[in-house]
Amino acid sequence: MNSRENSNKEVLLTDISYLPYRNGKRAYLSAIKDGSTNEILAYEVSNSLKLELATNTIEKLCRKRFKLAEGSFIHSDQGVHYTSPKFQNLLKRKGINQSMSRSGNCWDNAPMESFFGHMKDHLNLKECKNLKEVKKEMKRFIDYYNNHRYQWDLKKMTPVEYRNHLLSVY
Image (cartoon, rainbow, N blue to C red; front, side, top):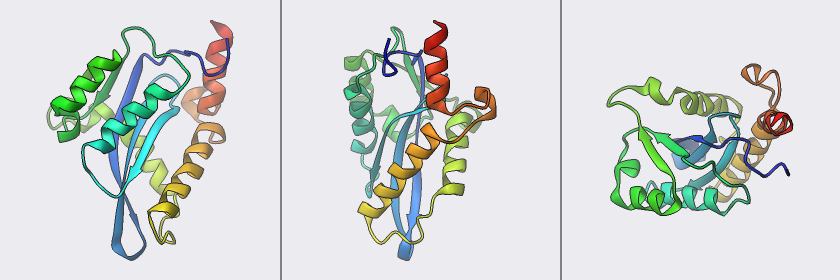
């Protein structure tokens, strides 16, 4: 079994966060996190909050070479992107079930919010002059987070190390 194969990928989390950068500009990040390993499986950075931000992230997830677990579902808040019929139909076509937080309850998606908090502590976007530089900084951070940032709740392993650990015991 190679490291790209299913380590569970049954519970996925998604959300969108803003990325302020130089001169008061703002970009947006849509990310999908594996609920078992904390690994960021797919993400999209854009200067627009249009629906494509969320749908492109799902498309990127589905283009990866791993398989999602049968019956997998993705959890989000009740934001306009996730309640959109276009987004919901895309999930159905991809065989992904949907779960949403209770109205007004941010704790339901706390692991995703926690990721965004840690991310903003580590990112250096103040020097980014344009969206291309923001994307480069995000790519650097996601690589660091997935491959080099040890996490206590993952037995002091990185998300990728923990995924590989899970694969070795199954």
